[in-house]
Image 1 (tube, rainbow, N blue to C red):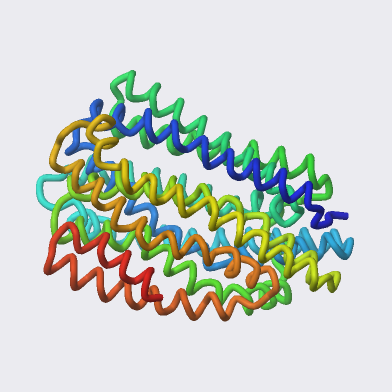
Image 2: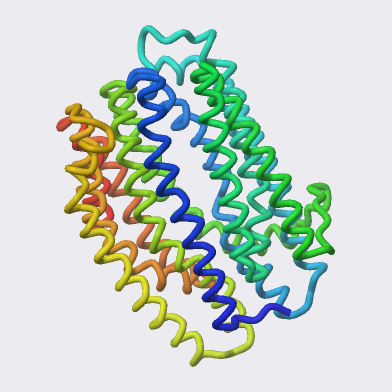
Length: 416
C-alpha cells in the first residue's frame, strides 16, 4: 500500500525535476536547429499549428487532479477495484470530450485557418496536417490517465520517466525528419509517432506498477463520474486559466499581427515554461502525498509537508528566475542571433518571469489544497486570473501590439 514516505517523496521529486531538466538541452539544441532549417516564416506557421491543436486541451476538463487524488486515496484504503473505475471513467470522459472538440474544430477548420494564418496560406496543404495533429494530441490527452495513475500510486518517478521518453523520442524524430528535408509535414508525422510510442511506453509502466490495470472505456461508471465531476468542475477554472496562459496570447498575436510574431512569442514561451517547470516539478508529488496523509489523519505531517515544500521551492525559484532574467538578452544573442525579433523574445521572458516568481512560491499551497479536496480556494484565484488575462490581453495586444501579450499575462498573474 502506498505511503507518503519522505524518501519516496524525495526520489519522486528528483525524478520529476530531472524530467524537466532534460527539457533544457532539448530546447537549447532544437530551437535554433528548427529555426535555421525551416526559416522564421515556416517556424511561425508551425507555431500557429501547435497553437491550433492546443485547443483540444479544453477536453482536459480538470479531471487529472481528482484522478490522482482518488487513486491515491483508493490505494491507501486498498480498494484496487475503485482505481480501475476511476481510471476507466476518466478515459471514457476524455475520449468523448476529445472527439467532440475535434469534431467542432474540424467543422470550423477553414474559418480558423483563415483567421489564424492569414492570407497566402495553402489551405489544401495545411488542413490534413492539422487533422493529423488533432488526432495525435487527442490520443496524448486521452491516455494521460496513465501518468495520472502512476502519480496517484505515488510513483511520480515513473510518470517522469514517461515524460522523459516522450521528450527524447520527439527530439530525435524532429532531427531525423528535418534532416530528411520533410519540413512541416515531417514534424507532423513525428508528432503522431511520438505520441503513439509514448502511450505504449506509459501503458507498459502502468501495468508493471499496477498489474490489475484493465483499460476499458466501456466500464464508465456514472456514480464515479459524478464524484469526480463535483471536484473537477472547480478545478476546471484553473485549467481554463492555464489554457488561456498558454494559448490566448498567441491566438491574439496571430489575429492582430502575424504567424512570425507567434513564432517569436513561442520561443519566449518555451523558454519561460522550461524555467518555470523546474521548481514546479518539486510540487508534483504533493497531491498524492497530501491525499494519503489526509486520509490517514496525519495533520502534523501535513503541516510539515507544506512548510518544507514552501521553503525548498522559494529557495530554488527566486535565484533561478532572477538569474535567467539577468542573462537572457546576451544569451539569446549568442543562442539565436542578433535579429530584432529575438530581442522581443528575450524581453517577453523577462516580463513573464517577473510575475512567475510569485506564482511558483505560492504553488505548494495550491497543490496541497487540491490534495485535501479543497479546490475552491485555488479556483477563486484562477477565476480572477482568467478574467484579467482575457480582458487585458485583448485590450493591450490590440492597442500595444506584440508587447501587450506578455504584459497582460504578467499583470494578471501578479494581481490575482
